[in-house]
Length: 84
Image (cartoon, rainbow, N blue to C red; front, side, top):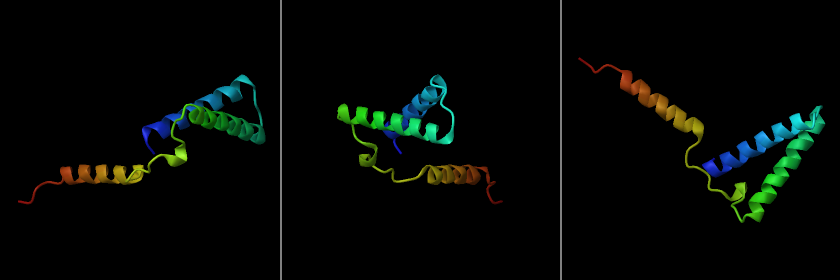
């Protein structure tokens, strides 16, 4: 997931949270509906701006988990003491 998709997701999440608080939305279905409505508006805005829709964005070559594992492995390799 690249920065464009992350930003769209964060925007959707924060706007949904604000909507739920502002409108005192309660209940699972009502919260689900709010998420759906905000997500639909975010997608509509992306489309109107001639942006790239999330499903059309390139898929990264490595997942976050893969990158984390590689970084952890590098740390472990760096901490090993050289053979005497």
